[in-house]
Every structure is written in C-alpha cells, then in structure tokens.
Length: 96
Image 1 (cartoon, rainbow, N blue to C red):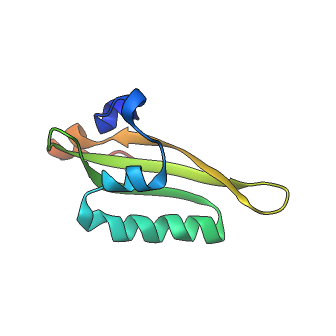
Image 2 (image 1 turned 180 degrees about the vertical axis):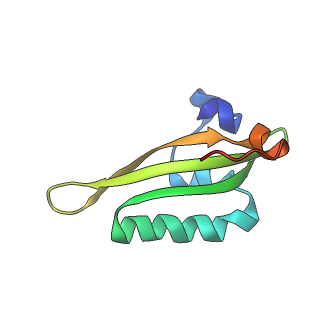
C-alpha cells in the first residue's frame, strides 16, 4: 500500500483522515458513503477511486475490503487490499 500511495511507512500515519487526504476530492463523497454503508450494514466493498500522490501523479485504485465484528457486534478495523489499476486504465483494459 505504501508503494502504491507513494508514501514512506515511517512517515505515514495509517488512519482514516490521513488516508482520506490522499483521495482525489471528487471521489471522496462516494468513498465515504460506501465505507459508511460497510460499517452500518457489513459485507464487503469492491470499488474504484483515484488518489493523488505527493509527486502530483494520479493513480487509479481498486479497493477490495471486508469488515469483521467482535462478539458484541462492534466493527473491527476494515481489512482489505488496494490494487493499482492505473496502467490498465491507461491502456483501456478492464479487470474482472
């Protein structure tokens, strides 16, 4: 994830505010809505959004995530993966 986002692990605080600050502004509302739905309803996410790296390059990301809950129903941190789709997008390819 650090390599995809172009950040150093030692200087990146892994929390929702820091992560959200890297998301392209136009994609934030959709992303926030989907994460909120995941937190409320459970299940999984499969969505695409764009990030802006510190070098100002834009990367297309696919997020696959699932939420788990403890015995009391409280959400445990979301577990997922980020895939960099930028090269596929540039060449007009789709991943299924």
